[in-house]
Image (tube, rainbow, N blue to C red; front, top):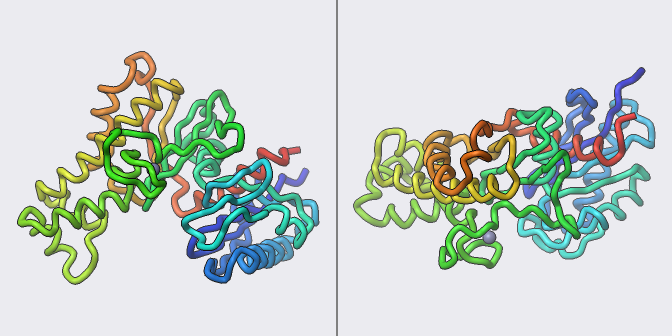
Length: 320
Ligand SMILES: [Zn+2]
């Protein structure tokens, strides 16, 4: 019997990536196109439809093979409407699923990229067979998803779980979401960069400024300086890690997870960030819940969005 196949779409601010994904996790017929978000939602959705039909034709897929989309949020997966998204300017209450379905006449389902990441890790990645999972995507911002007893926890509108916008400090720094003191405002790529830029205006920033040369001081520069022993860079990552650990502790106490999986570019800072996070998590969680819980890294890398979109389509439209 032929293996179930679906089409996955990873919509990002810069690129649209599309591929056929098999139930066993093989990616076929990859294709991509620039997003050109500035052209507006109709043009972007049309381009997605063209890419989908291109890979479907190359793979010889029937018209009933479904499409899963991992998109920046916030979005409502029940109605298929993207409410707005900072990564795609001009998107406001966009009927994404309806518009794409009209164009390609295939079953279409939509989820935010963080939740897709959690589904992808569970089906194809580091968390295979894990029913209780916290996925944290540490990138420019912080996203992720929560699976509890095998069920994705996304609330009444499907807008949850905004794991990056959990409060660490009531009077903390302003966050991109408009709130203050979110973990994203401490431990994301942009927050680490903001701290480093501030330190770089002082004598403590000598090492980081030197490494950056004429370029920007970003999280990668901070990591490099920290690895070379720069105390200021180490302190920046220690502070970010401790904020992360505080919310990890809260997640442990709330969900009693089997595993926390880290994805995203900032997760590649590794122990510089995760060691202080683990230490702090210990201070903010119950022993019996964290004992034996695994902390690990995503194995899906740059294909997380595609795998997540594929896992979404497989879970929504069934396996046969
Ligand atoms: Zn926030």
